[in-house]
Length: 499
Image (cartoon, rainbow, N blue to C red; front, top):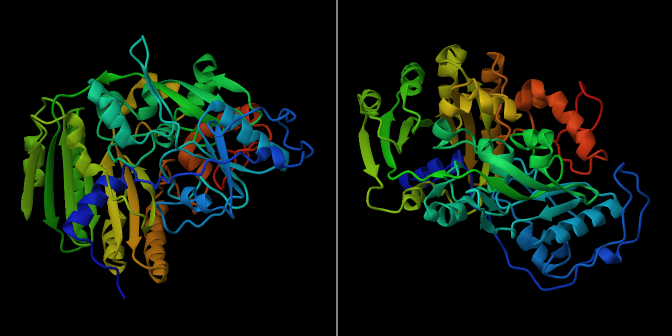
């Protein structure tokens, strides 16, 4: 049975949610005592500071859940229904003291630690089998500082960021989908509608509080190498980030969108449209953004603009021969309301989503464009998307201050596959792998860390480029026992080798 076709409404929801995140399920919890004190002491073999006596905590600091408890299932949820992991403990933390307590438990039992903030991980890196998950989804405080910066808790979702920060007339240049967690977005780089004007989300990060595996609390602004690493390389690698401080920018006055739809009959037509789009979109003003989204034979071109620059020449040229061309504006409405159409679907579903390479020009994939299109038709449920970067993302000052290595690329692509039943997974994955191989065989190997794929060869350099060895050195410094680990975490061994 083939996958059900997405309705127009579902597809628009996915269009809003795919690039910029999903809405997780947040459960309630029982008031109960933490269970860490009941665990017997174990010999320290991790290489971290020897465990100290557990500090006194209360239910307002942390609640530790085990598999046999009803509330465990409410916190062991995943937006991606493909992900089925069972950590031994889920520590729902509300304070830094709660995080320290959870890490002491992991140290005593010598457990791997994953960190889950408010959102999701495409490959389930925010959870594990048999280890401990530090769940900081309830740490959502928003504090305005005297210097105009804003500090936020790692559990804050973007829809909450929009309502609390944008309502103050300020902008943190994050994504748009309501279910993305600000911590994961920032620590992996973070791009969206505002990146070409203000840079990546991590470029506005000016400080972060980190709890190391041994319980030591450090401020990243006081340790420049750590701040460099957290700007694009910090997803659950060095410790638990319990607060992020951002530079806030003026909120735009208006947000305009143009949505153009084409019917693409075949592979050559797909290639022609993609080439035309990749020639025109670098000419967009920095306040504008573009996305090229191919779903079966339906091509959706999304343009957004929150500046005074005129993009009509570009949109008119891309609309030639279109079956529809729709424009809208947020004029007269709260700015955050204009983003709600991009909040994404709230309910879990089966999917595979990953980066499909950074591109300089259409020539990078010209010879395989027709094959990509044919694979999408042969495997219904696959979506190929290309997003605009460039502008302030290329700022040399940002380049030196962060470990995000792919600033020179004007385009980032992603591949998505959706299906209704587990039995359909094999077909989706076959097409998914075929397209990834087509692109990789063209020499396209740079990938976006926030869109991981467990099957990427040499993912270390695909994500981090030449910065990987430096990140490994910092891993040795901040997590010498490799307490924080998952299938593609930064390793703690000698530099220059695989993790």
